Length: 154
Figure (cartoon, rainbow, N blue to C red):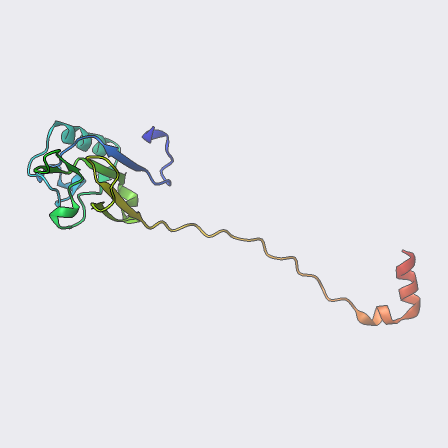
């Protein structure tokens, strides 16, 4: 699916892949350095491989936030918080993502918190056709009775 998208379009992939991304230097170019976890799990490795193969970046770990705004899954006993939901975007369109963070307030009746992603997309200008410019009419021709009569006949 990603290969079929034109390069000028922005690709945004929102995923719940249970991928924990760590702070290993190998993945920092794709994931950034502001992850919640120290080590990458197997799903995280697969996500990084996918991101590298498709020239995308994991944006949820690119922004410096407090720990409370990074975790987006909580265990039923409320003791463990994980960062497993991720937002991927093309490398050449990363400036379109302003911020990715967790919203802990809304109750969505799930063990996941909402992940808020703010986009800033500049739209292309639509060029309008120039209006047709009419030449001014010669008022003296209308005032001349013989020319006015000829105009009405034609």
